Every structure is written in structure tokens, then in C-alpha cells.
Length: 346
Image 1 (tube, rainbow, N blue to C red):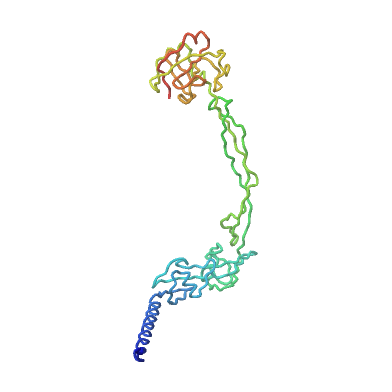
Image 2 (tube, one colour):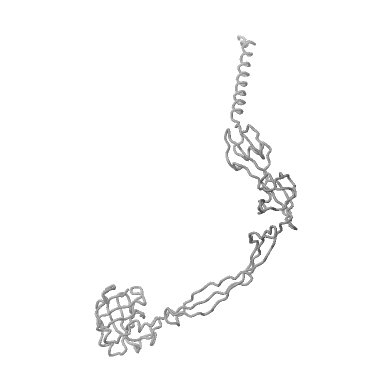
């Protein structure tokens, strides 16, 4: 058995050296890549500019990395959620907490600005109107500063406003069609409003609505509109029966071939007695129809009968079948049953 040859020390050292060089190369590549990935950003905070390098993807990440805190009413441009790229500029303006005293009123504000005049504008005051201000309107703002305006105060006033009533229409089948009657005249309501205004040097400024509530609700005006139709008059058109039956067919309308039968109010088979399904009193000119074929209220011209109106229904009246009402049994018998062409008026 031959002894196993051992590797020389020089060979092992060479392998270790190659491995070390490889690790070093990877480390250098990683570090150089990390440095290369950083972005150069200019940050301007309250007018002071500085440059920084960052790997943050957006403005919020950049400010967190730089230790810049942002509170309510502070201005950040671009917005915190905006992405950033190499060479971008981010501006941060911190709001300055100040106290503004207007007469007996004290207001705590956070003002985005540099001078006392900016705080006055934030209060809704015009710094050019000659106000008595301490410190002067040109003074620089500092955190915690108190600004006193001696000839300005807030005035709160209440005023009552009338609320006009709304109109509501209801139908009344007991009234003739299209007639109107006031059922309830209604009444206006009352609204109480609380307004605040700034008084400067004795001059009252614009009013700002602070609150409002309904003290008394308005009552609607209710108007009834009649829906009852005088079907008999509408059917005859104010003409006598003979004249109506002799009129020529109208030039307009839809022509329709129907089976025309007859009935009279004293027919014992009628369930409604002397009134049609619509409530109209039965008589000459009332026509029973199938409402799915001829809508109720439709005026119909029938040759030999004259003008009628679809104002009744019947269990036996289906499809292209109409039933003409006559005043007497003799007239009903004389008519009998006929197939003819009628005209449905628009």
C-alpha cells in the first residue's frame, strides 16, 4: 500500500489567497454599489439649505433619516409620499406657535410665516389697516411669541332667519280634474344663526357663520288637485246623442278593428250597479274595454254610436272587444253585436 501524497504548503497558501482576494472583491463591489445607490438631495429647512446623501425612496424616508420632524400645519414640498430622485430639492417650512390677543380674546395659532404680519393674516386681519399691534407688524416671529392687537375684538351676534315652507301636491279624486284647492296654507319656520365678526377700530368686518339650528320647522303648503273626470260629458263632447252618432270619423287617431257589443245600466249582470269601474255614472258614451289593450280614459269614435270614452271594464271584455253603454234595453238590443273599425283618439 502506497502512502497518500500530501499537498504542498505552497499549494494551500495559493488557494487561501485566491479565496481572500475573491471575498475582498465582493466586499469592494458591495460597498461601491451601496455608495453608488445613494442620491444627492438638497434640503431647505426654514430657509436654510443643506445637502445630504440618502438611499430613502420618498420624502418621508428622507426626513426621518435626517431627523427632521414635521407637525400639523407644517409645509413639506414635495409631499411626504412623493418619490425622490438624485438632484431633487425638498423644502420644509415649520409653523411657528404664537398667541394672538384680540381685546379680551386669546387665540393659539401655528403660523407658517416669518413676521407678525403673517400671524395677523392667519387671524383674518388686514395688517395694512393701521392696527395697533405689539410687537410691530414687521417683527420676526419666534416660537411662543404673544402678539397683542389692542383696537380689535370679536363680536358674536345671533340672528333669526325665516325658513320658507315647501309646497306639496296631493291628488283628490272627489274634485273635478285639474281643479285646485289649498288644503293647508302652511307656515314659515325659524332658523337661529350664530355669527362672529371682527371689529377693527370700530368698523365691523365680514360675518362668519359659527353655528345654526332650526328653532321652528316650517309647515308645508298642501294643495289638492282634482283627478275626477266627468266621463259622460267627455264622451259626448257636449253634443246630443243623435248628433254625436252621425259625426264623421275623425281625421286623426289610431284605427282598430274590434267586436262591439252593448249593455245598459239596469242589466242585472252588472256588479257595479249604476257606476262604471272608474266611478263614472253609467250612461250613453261610456265604453267598457280591456285596459291592457285600450287604456282607461281613451276617447273612442265608434261608427253609428259616436264618441265614447273608455271608462269601464268587465270580466267578459278581453282583447279587441269593447262594450258600449246605452240608456235603455231597447237601444242595447237594437245595437246587438257588430265587428267594425273604431278610432282611438290621441
